[in-house]
Length: 390
Image (cartoon, rainbow, N blue to C red; front, top):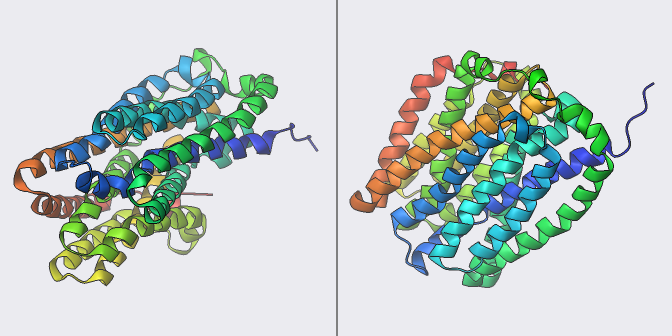
């Protein structure tokens, strides 16, 4: 029996933990959006810019990070991304619009470097079992960041717009030190797995062309999820539904994570399921809740959207990266995130700009309805859960 290289499992644990922590930071502002609106006077367009400044920088860096030269330096990029996350936290912690927008852009830079790097580091340690890290880690980080920020908000009130980010910065420092030491100790082993050189990397363009259906599903899924996160807390605040406003996003993210973790078992039981149907049902429930003022359909809608998005986003990433090596998987994870985030950013920016003139509630209602119809139209083309594998 071949001996397991020392530190292999610890590298996967710390690499996955670093990615989750990076995504926790990018989701920390989510519960604070109503506070930004009420205390700092953010308009609907400014709230949208807190998302766009992040995603714009993220998408640009993700495309650069998919290059072979960057992908082959994944360990260094992962540690650097944690350092940039700390700097972003300091800017966000100023509690002023310029610092918040600049911090969000720096979060995009950090997340862009860390996405493919974390995938490559984890796959180099544990192989194909790490293929879904970018999807599962994304949702785990979203839950951690949103829940922790909501807790700090409930405990400290408006001080959370500063304190939440200082806590995250300390966590990044605490994780970066053991991660850097371990990656230095294992640099020769990682070089064999990751630093393959351009000639040995699989070309990614043909892979993307063949897998256009998973890409379409990923774009629809992430647009629905991000639109819910950006607009629905304020949407339900304007409808006078504080319970749905407070619990909706945590329920959405928790449902996403649970379905992702349970996907292998669900694929055996219900192989023909598609996450797009669940998202469409959830959007319909949200619209019913807003029209009737009933909390239960609203909470159920968040759960359905999260469950559908969790399964569909993970499945699409797995199909995209099947049969590729560590460095190529890192590049594909970066490109998948860049494409899905880029489409989502365009949708959110357009909706925010229109809401600035037409009002948040009617524009969000229209956005939900259009997304619902899009999910139903794409349902016949969407991959089914039975293809997800382990």
